[in-house]
Length: 101
Image (cartoon, rainbow, N blue to C red; front, side, top):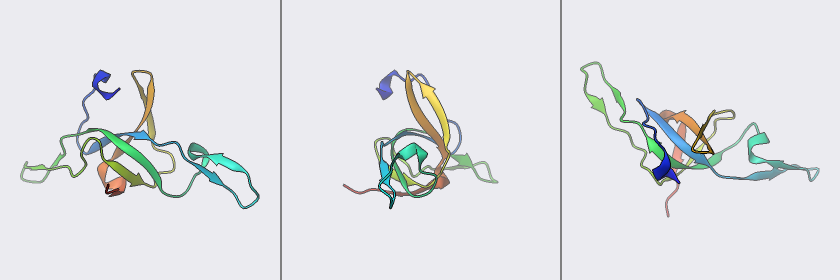
């Protein structure tokens, strides 16, 4: 549960809850999502940093919002364990897009 997380994000970092997915190869081998090195992966945004500052010191707002389902293509994101759950920590520019309901 994200309300149990005692953690704040810095800068343009986003904490994601990865979705479990799998890929079936042409020969029928099932590979779990974390074993697939390439391709688009999906995750839920759990925490969002405040953003970066520009050359004038003004805060550049983040586009990501908690609860969004996003796509990314990072093969090996930074894995962080918080409150007994594994999350991915990535920079917001690595997010390819947001899924619409």
